[in-house]
Image 1: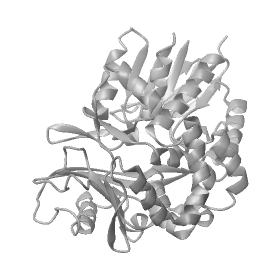
Image 2: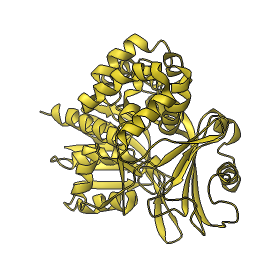
Image 3: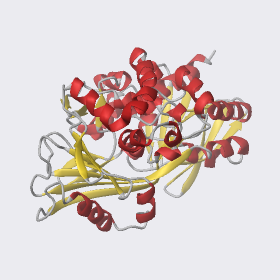
Length: 437
């Protein structure tokens, strides 16, 4: 049995991981020359730094199982230690271990009406962690009742501005008025978790996984291979792809798409245009990420990150690691960022925006840059759709009708976090393997 996985981001890597546990041959297609996708890595001075996948929740059971199989790398505690700028005032959002203090802070920031509305949803996740993903039973039912309004309409203004927006802008690149209650469970689950970081980083972990699959013919990684068409061919699925200006084809028993929804839509336009149209209803928003090393430490240990309001292009700035207080990870997302920054913006100019905004609060002035890396993703963060579970049901119905043998996973299935991508990939592989005679 031969299976192709299209897309070498986190969802594709997760799919390949689960497939290699079965007696199948896997070809992993990646259009870039490096795996990782939007959680990819780049070398800065003498080390690899990761654009995504830094924070690993303690509830990330599937991802931690993957990491354990790849040499069981060490994690370091990171915590939150985040502050937020509210009406020009710095407000601390977390004191590690101070649960009662944090509860009082939540009530103050959110207001009693906000807490009353959020509590049943938080409780549903705490009672059953499997509900804290996109399209879970609990949040699908909530979606059918409430997705005629946005989060901005569902919750009170203090809760939206002080609690909800910092979450949606970071995870989805979207404002609360662009998100729906039925999809918010995947974000709430992240808000009630605590976090660590891989000491060696995502780059080392991914490469360890690839090298660990030593059985001949089990996993073939095809970097620089862009799939350009998917076609049904009797009892197989035929892929057309380009590599070094050459067009080639290959046939597989099954194909798994691990692409973002809009990329899959482009591939399905010819075979099933209705599915392509439905996939384009899933919204993605741009994000710019800069990782900058300074000569001296930027952050004090007690405040390693800051969230900014909707009036700035910079959504947040934080230390790259617990012991990397001289390295800043700037994230640009939200409506203001969409107006001020584009794929044509010079990286130095974008970083200058970030430095100007953070300078009053951290050690930026007279602290020279020593190096930086920067990436801009025009469709980088997934914000899903209203009544998302019903949309996915329609998409799957059209795909199975016109391209049987093709199955899809990705960040729009169970959520955008690494753990959600691993869960979606696990479920997808179970379906693919389970339908084999």
